[in-house]
Amino acid sequence: MSGTTSTNGQPVRKALDGIKVLDMTHVQAGPSCTQILGWLGADVIKVELPGRGDITRGQLRDIPDVDSLYFTMLNCNKRSITLNTKTPDGKAIFEKLIQHCDVLVENFGPGVLDRQGFTWERIRQLNPRISYASIKGFGPGEFEDFKAYETVAQAMGGGMSTTGWPDGPPTSSGPQIGDSGSGIHMVAAILAALYQRTHTGRGQRVSVAMQDAVLNLVRVKLRDQQRLAHGPLLEYPNETFSDYVPRSGNASGGGQPGSALRCAPGGANDYVYVIIQPQVWAPLAKLIGRPELVEDPAFATPEARLPHLDEVFGVVEAWTQGLTKFEVLEKLNSIDVPCGPILSTKDLIEDKSLRARNMIADVPHPERGTFKTVGCPLVLSDTPVEITTSPLLGEHNEEILNEIGWDGKGAKELQAAGVL
Ligand SMILES: CC(C)(COP(=O)(O)OP(=O)(O)OC[C@H]1O[C@@H](n2cnc3c(N)ncnc32)[C@H](O)[C@@H]1OP(=O)(O)O)[C@@H](O)C(=O)NCCC(=O)NCCS
Image (tube, rainbow, N blue to C red; front, top):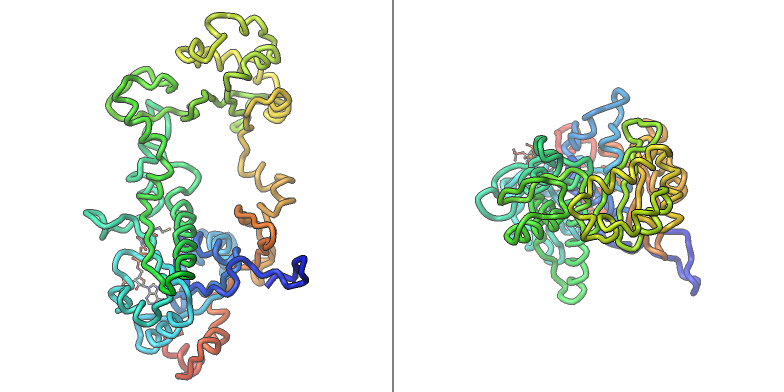
């Protein structure tokens, strides 16, 4: 609970205070969801395979024998219990956990929990108030039994066919829209199920398919797919069109044209993305020292500029190339032109404003020292997020067994038997 007090003197509770999440997630898609639930105040109990835990604990390690950044950056504000849910004692403890919690979240391969006997029917029988939330690669249909990773979802959700350059291969995006994109969709679905439970008293089955989450984020390209029936997409830089939306490099994809323009001194990320709204053309032309283009019939209107956007942006780039991306940011914002310098990961992790807002946060970890993580992008005025470290494997075994009233074999015996 937060130490803050409200105006009526009552302690300010976290938004999801009192909600218990049984977190059976692994890798990225599921953990990104439950981490946000934890940040919003839920008690997240992460159930992990004894001995190994979430596979990411040991993947891409930068320090020997210490939980990887892959794990620590996706599992803050959680507690960890190890449990082999394939053993009889493990199943009995898992049943008690189901009865104890409000939401079960998992992103195993298709059918994993069913094979262990934990079907939705069984889970809701154990606890009618629990919602059972699953992230899978695909929804019901021909692909439902297939496993999926980030790039599989990007490939099959329209991300890769629409990303990259017209003459280059399909490309995946840096942002993990298949994994963390699905995770944040799942957060919304779980919150809706929790809200509805306040009326019905019942939990529900909640599903997000990674393919669907990517497709949702590729929505505007499906808009353009339908517009293609009426002719070429004039705002695209592409010269030829087939019967599908082509990759269009850095074209803005919106109703306002944009382009990434080179800046000084010419490094890999010395670019600024500039969008030319109709109303900014006149001040922009003057700022870049080309006032004659305000009246020039080939440049004066958005319609006139559309067929030769390369030339239009070339004129602006002749100006940006003499300035750093931050100088361009300042000058363009002074005349209200939307623009964004291309920030590298180094720029971001050192960014003062992101650090001031805890969007780049320092988190002390008992074994690795302090690590940096990306904070919570959801901001609630009364219940600020406090980021706490990711748990060590099985760190809360005994504490959680006590909480759920487990009165079977003790922790040491269970551990020796490979249950914990
Ligand atoms: C990501 C993915 C491809 C990984 O595949 P995988 O490493 O083969 O892992 P699976 O989830 O299929 O299987 C996990 C196995 O570990 C077992 N396991 C995991 N935790 C366990 C526990 N606490 N106790 C006992 N067994 C456990 C499971 O029972 C399963 O074994 P089984 O196949 O014998 O039933 C797969 O989980 C998947 O498709 N998930 C859904 C989509 C998704 O979220 N993808 C993105 C991940 S970022």
